[in-house]
Length: 229
Image (cartoon, rainbow, N blue to C red; front, side):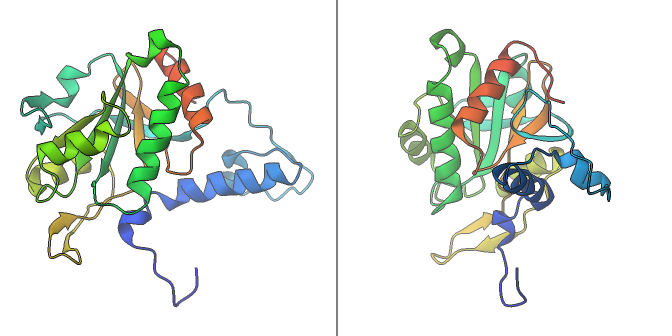
């Protein structure tokens, strides 16, 4: 990134994790195998090649507890995230339906990944899309937009303060309020989607660039009770 280029905060997410993943792809593509651990520890031995033996393909993160509290689902009912997804593999993403790129890409990849799961496993995953743009993301808008990807995806909304409180519980960067080109006030948002296992803790996250096949691989492991490491 040059001094003339600024990546909007809502498109940055956890760039450290994304950069590590990009470095891993670049090294692997050149015929070598590596791991983010090698990059993180800064090993200076040019003759040392660490093999990534993890079964998981997503980005491993520090454990993130599932947020507590209640928002309103796109069907109009109150939805307590922790209580209503207890023991269920849950994908949690903060975004908005008018997003021009990363939100649609994330939902599209997620829908493909779920279709790749065995039929018996597809119903064992909950996808929660928390709107950071409640002014425009009405329940009807959320239901229609998410339904284009998968009718089982659940849209959640609340006041900006409520959504911000949920986002803060995950450890994501605080998303300041801003007005878009249409004058709508919304929250900035990150790009990762947390993957909560049956223990109600997220040990990994998926980014918009995560291939659906990799997501499907990890979802199968999570459904079986696995813990990413």
